[in-house]
Length: 83
Length: 333
Image 1: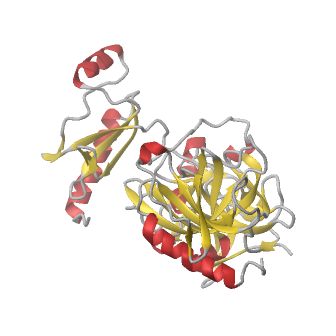
Image 2 (image 1 turned 135 degrees about the horizontal axis):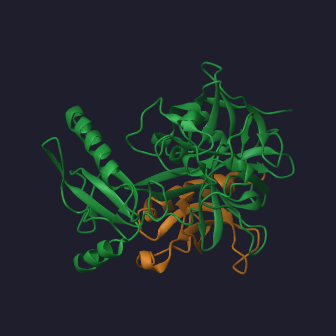
């Protein structure tokens, strides 16, 4: 994925770490990763930070920033368990 | 919390007695020794004999349940062995015979499933477990110790280690215990794991009784290594859901998952979605499977977790796993 190993990618990695530090302890947050813009949102193919959220029963929705260091942040559903 | 050896020895004796007395109880799925829950929280400074039950009864209901044969006894009473008293804890939710209640969907093996049978030679995609838990996970593949050249199997921490008090040298069964594996089915012994490096991964050294070859059931050999890329189509061969396909939708993830009783940060996570709606990517028991780039059969990840809503699989970046464990994946050019 050479094109993604670019300056943008390095910025996204730093932004991911900042977001993880801010949100990963929240009971509804299961995973924070780097992915493409979810279907139906924003610009297709754009790199975004994705905050995977457990079901609402796990608690209040955390406050999710619109972007970090210029990288858009998107909330997606995701509740994971060791298989 | 540190446990002194004398207490641990007494606990083992008590556990043995508790198992003898109560493991045949139809309501009991698992008995272990660990941190109890007190008023909804894990008591970090206590230890107890823990009965994992399918249904926890209130006092009035318990009497009726005993009478109807749904359970045999009140398990909440302290357990006394050799004059030594252990507190107990009754935990609901152990519907699946595994050490972490609350996981979804364990099912008994179909006797015709070749992945659930004893196999020789061994290959990736087969049922395995540690020696202590009625569970099954997946044998990922053949790796070689970079320090000693010893052949090893690669799988997850929660498949090969499966307990915070586990020790190096414990046995690995093929098939896994939930598929009928016994002490006669030992194929390897636990060597090291990478949980301290935030990776749910471990290796066990083969005993040599059965050969492990570079082959994934239903897929063929692993042909190399590569990095997971967004949009990449991937495939795995796992004990539970067999050969399934997916597409990488996230990389370099950081997750926080519960490995009861502890939450753990897991790094280097690759996120895999189904290629199409209603497709299954993974299920409980697939842990340890290797995810391969579908077009090249090059390994990209080690499966370790999944979710149903929405259907999605999580894997660990394979390079990070191999580096952390100081092993090399055996591949065919």
